[in-house]
Image (tube, rainbow, N blue to C red; front, side, top):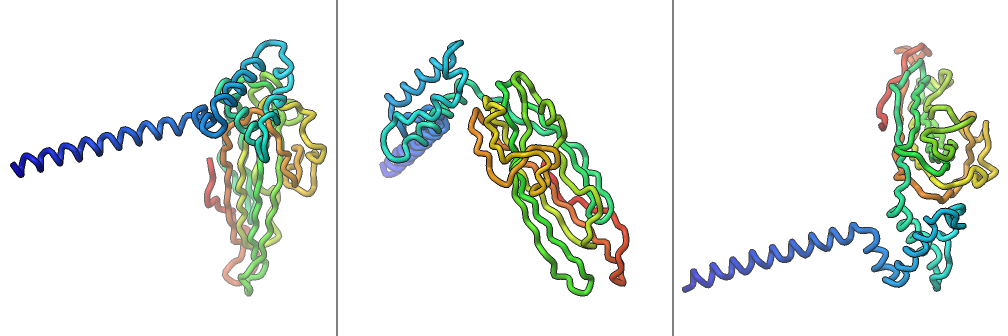
Length: 276
C-alpha cells in the first residue's frame, strides 16, 4: 500500500513537473511574439488601432507611404512618455508587416604594413531591395601608444564618430559618391614605435529615410573624424526609419618597432582580433 501511494506521488510529481514545463514553454513562446508584447504593454485597442494605421499606410498613394515616420510618431496615446512608446510600438508593427533589408558585410583580409600601418576593407550590401536610406556606422577608435623605450607607460587616445553611406531606392549597396568600401587602418607608419589600435564599430541600415534627413553636421572630409570622404560627424544623427539589426565590425592590431637596444626599426603590424 505504501509502495502504491509512493508510486502515485511520483506519478503526480512527474505530471506536475511536465505541466509546469509545458506552461513555461508556452509562456516563453508567447514572450517571443512581438505583437503579444505590444498587447500586454499598450492594450488590445491600442494595438488594433496601430495595426489599422499600418494597413492604411501600406495602401498605394497614402500620405503615410510617402512619409513613413508620420504614423510612427503619433502622440495620440496620452500620458507622460507615451509618444515614445507609440513610436516603438509602431516601429515594431511596421517591422512585423514589412521586415527591413538586413545589412551584410563582405570583408577582405587585413593587409598589415610596418609599424602601425594597416588596411582592412569591407563592402556593404543589403539582403533585399529597400526604399532608400542610410547605412550608419558608429566607430569607437582607441590608440594605446609607447613613444619611449625606457618608459613603457604610454598615452591613450580615443575618438567616437558616426559615418554614413547613402543607398538609393531599390538599391542593395552604397550609391553615388558613397560607393567606397568601409576601410579600417592607417595609411602611414605611426610616429610611436610601439602601440595598439582598436576599432570597435557597429553598423545599421535605416530604410525609408530621405537623403535630406541626414543632419547638416554630417559632412565629407570631416577632419574631426577618420571617415575620409564619407559624410561623418561626432554627433549621433539619430535617424529613424525601418532599421536593420545592428552588426558588429571590429579590428585590433599592434606593432613593436623597437629593437633590443631601443632603436627604431621596421617590423610588420600584427592583427590581434577581427569581426567578422
